[in-house]
Image 1 (cartoon, rainbow, N blue to C red):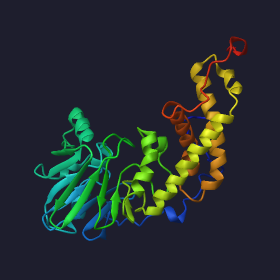
Image 2 (image 1 turned 135 degrees about the vertical axis):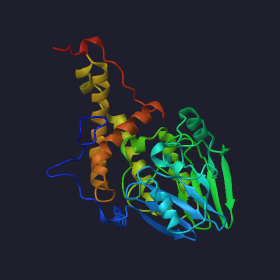
Image 3 (image 1 turned 180 degrees about the horizontal axis):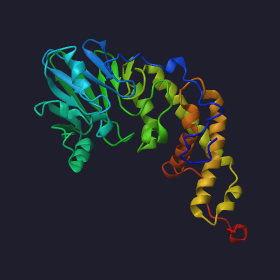
Image 4 (image 1 turned 180 degrees about the vertical axis):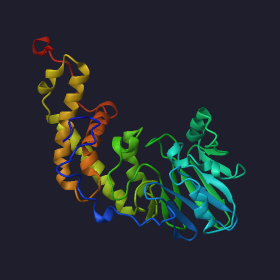
Length: 328
């Protein structure tokens, strides 16, 4: 396992990484550089193989949901390949530019809708490519246009403040971005997550919805309900094993670096993270792609969240002076 707390080389052996399971692979992207595909009843998803967005044809205009720069103006091309209806509404999943950074391709007349925290961030950043929402909400908002309905809900912090659930009840589809990674483990930092307890809770929140299709914003394919259940199992395993390791670990071997306090902390938590990762890797390799790449990092992040968010013991303490190893 990697000795680095943010290490992304965990599990690299021999010629390379573990193979990507077939169940993690998505559809082939056409030569034009994007795939547009109907999910059900006028709801479509668009992907270039790494990012995902969506749109809904209502009969009275199009509701666009996000527009990642990696797809760029091909979002509009995808919409135009399906309908001539104008884009009348733009829903922001959250404020991050890698998901809404080219929403300026839509007319300024189209109503932007997002959470109050999304507006707060966009007002602060003053990015001309991300116009702040015209319609904001704190808890829930129902958007009805023509024959279509979207339910927008905020259940608290997760990957980012203001990151919302977008539920299409008629289509039995759910979109939430940067929280779930169908067929894969999350990116580093559990998806660069701002609120780890909230991230953990969002697995249960998601399963409260009636859906069988998940648009996750990232990676190779659409998700299913069982993908949320699988990731919940992975995260539950991380938390359980991290708690167990914290209770069992001996702090003394970490003190050899006490002449550098950062070294002591990093060495201590890397030792525990390696223990957690080695325990879990045999179970998860072959089930979720990328587990060998990020499991050490995820273990480290979960350990830190247990320490600072959940107040888990034992805490790391400095040793008595007699045990301090001085630097040569």
